[in-house]
Image 1 (cartoon, rainbow, N blue to C red):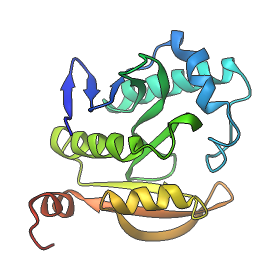
Image 2 (image 1 turned 135 degrees about the vertical axis):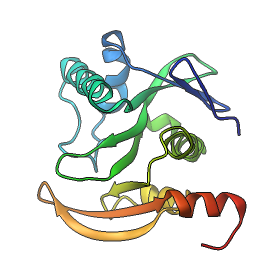
Image 3 (image 1 turned 180 degrees about the vertical axis):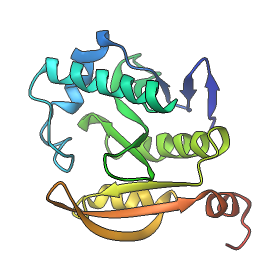
Amino acid sequence: MRDVLLDGRLETERTVLRRLTSDDASALFRSVGDPAVMRYWYPGPDPDVAGAARRIAEIDDHWQAHGFGDWGVVSKLEGELIGFAGLHRIADMGEVNIGFVLQRDRWRKGLGFEIAEAVLTYGFQQLRLPEVVAVVDPRNTASVRLACKCGLTPRQRFMWMGRERQAYGVSLQEWEAGRTGAPT
């Protein structure tokens, strides 16, 4: 796998992660407007393209405030925006969360792992974050499996916005040890 950060873009074998723009709202709506895709996300799918545009504005605000955030995920094969992924802070939580959303036709093809590994590498190598968490609805078995495959381990279960959540996490030290094969 190739993870390269060029001009604010993160590149993997099959995707380019780049900053979203207001022009991406219609394309992003294909994923964030899909009830099945957004089933486990709070508050659920965006109601319309204007909702996707508001999401993009919020993502841009996060970049401005923190110097990192979510990128649009573009398929290298088709050159199409197929979702978003990245690192972000969640309201009322101190940790940095990794998250992603991909269109349904992109599920079960290994893209989630490819993207998550690149985002974690960026978070730890470039940002030197002390820890990254994935806050997951425990019923979302695909995201739970992906978090574990990426080396995140269960941290705590809690209620957030009236919904049960499970935090999985990995510290910088654990991540570095896992990449070198050294014991933690």
